[in-house]
Length: 199
Image (spheres, rainbow, N blue to C red):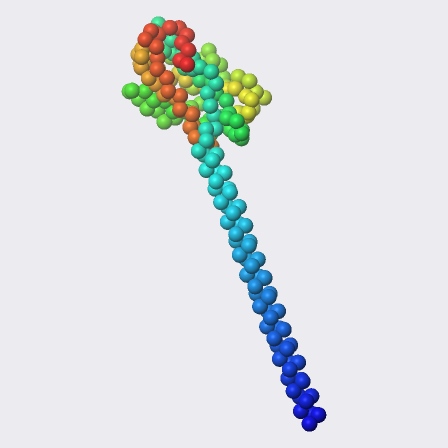
């Protein structure tokens, strides 16, 4: 009789140990599963934030105009157009060098996807006889990046300007590597002066 009691107690102890092992394995599996779910949730949230941030950066304008657009003419022929611009508030510095910034020109006769393929160093070199595009820093630290607080200017003097007539509309688009484009559309006055502020 005593031997049977011991055997029954041994079996109960073994069953309790098996139950404890099963419970511990369930807890470990549940903890691992919870960690995987939480990790995936955090990763998804982080990626969603990155996508939203990138979308906002692309949707908002990276650069904006400062002041008027100045056009110059000689003998009633438009020689060049100068646009002043700066970086928008809260935007990162933008590379203004050739190959990074794209400048397009459009009027009623022609559309040129990129006229910024070289960089002049002297404004006196830009004329109808020597066409080109010059992007230069007006105020800043002297590098190729436009940063908050700096003012830059782009002078366009492509040959197509000489065909513009009074009251005609032309468009210059500045397309930085990030952010939306800056579209500058202006109409020439009824009479072409030597210096014109196309505000």
